[in-house]
Image (cartoon, rainbow, N blue to C red; front, top):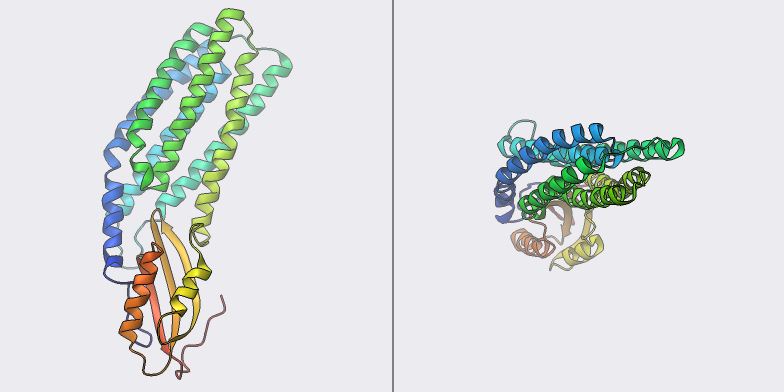
Length: 314
């Protein structure tokens, strides 16, 4: 933040360090992401081949979902590496932090596609009654898949708190664990009863279960891309807190948005009575914004007798 007038700066020194903190937090996820990626991609090949050989749609749906898991992990990894290495000099004044959000949106779109394909294929198999599944290979691969997903779950659990893209991959692993359990149940039913329709039924159930998760991821990503205020932020409370600073007579052009995971940004104009100490106003505004977990802010302080700072109505 700057002195009275048009000068701008961060909301205190903590704002300058926030990007470094974010990069360090994301960097901790790189090694677990690499391990999770190798495990996931390697197993997807085994699961997909077995699904075709065994004729199992449930296993195929689980392998397709695991493929999107692998892609989600790769996207998260690529976004973190690119964002951490990108300079914020030149035209990219915010670096490449938004890549993480775009990766999350791509993952959500892929999940919608997988869910739609599985549901349609399951309905067709049920209608035409052409299910014929070999339960043995299906059971073995589904069990191994469950173990792989548990390992990936444990690898990504810590990083899910720091990154939306890692959180998306983490939730994919959780979903896959449940999907693997469903495939195991279907394989056991087929092995002991010979009732093949359980396979497309489980596949359809997995597809239906994926949809709300994909919707949640897409909504979270779009909320960031549309620069909607974070759900935990009370804009009116922030406005009231800033307006309560001694010497402030008006707060306008208040905007709060999310740049990327765990990085909220704010900007505002604070009008003060002529002669008010701008430094004291800026210091108090910084303290108030930090109480709302906003460490990066641009505040413009305007004297009430200054006519050059017309409010922008957007």
